[in-house]
Amino acid sequence: DSGVTQTPKHLITATGQRVTLRCSPRSGDLSVYWYQQSLDQGLQFLIQYYNGEERAKGNILERFSAQQFPDLHSELNLSSLELGDSALYFCASSVGVQGEQFFGPGTRLTVL
Amino acid sequence: AQTVTQSQPEMSVQEAETVTLSCTYDTSENNYYLFWYKQPPSRQMILVIRQEAYKQQNATENRFSVNFQKAAKSFSLKISDSQLGDTAMYFCAFMKPPNSGGGADGLTFGKGTHLIIQP
Image (cartoon, rainbow over all chains, first blue to last red; front, side, top):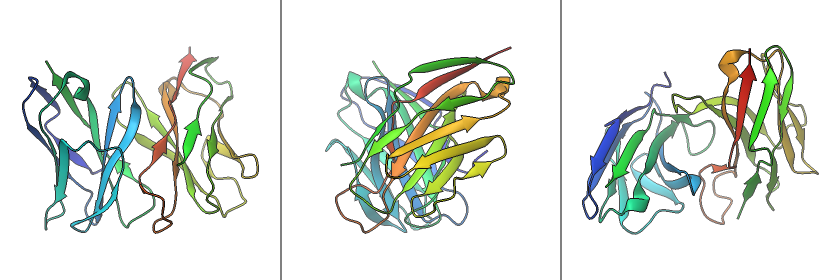
């Protein structure tokens, strides 16, 4: 158990819908990262927040957005969902802006 | 942009054997971090080992060790005395230090190597 929690574990929805994935980092970690793992794209970095502020952006679509709240938990919002958004979404956390990242168990999103 | 290449999609070895997984990367950075992550069938991503580029000494963690060749941009993982529980996908990952410019500070992953340990 890495100490990073993600909810829900599984999510099934339809095209065009909007969903919110939630992540709680390890106690004491200030950075939260979001990653997408799909069969065709592999593991891709989406976005990082550090202590409430956006820190870095990767291959995140404009339909996706994220935020980190004062209690340091983070949410990833996915809207206008397409079939290709079906993937495993991981949250990871680290103490600072760099260093070892510890991953949560992931949220499996299925778009039908 | 950084790229990470794992040229072995799948490997299979007998229990107790030693196996080496290959990873090469491309970057113009001088300082960076390299990692190996393990993803068993449960899909959990587990950090196996890390290496800082400025350290010449190869990192080791129990049965896991790396061969870091900075000039060759190579970062291989050696698993000694392999066990059935080592069966998993193994991902090599690169991370540049913060504030180094050029975009994302997240991990850049390779495509992975599926390692199967046979009884």
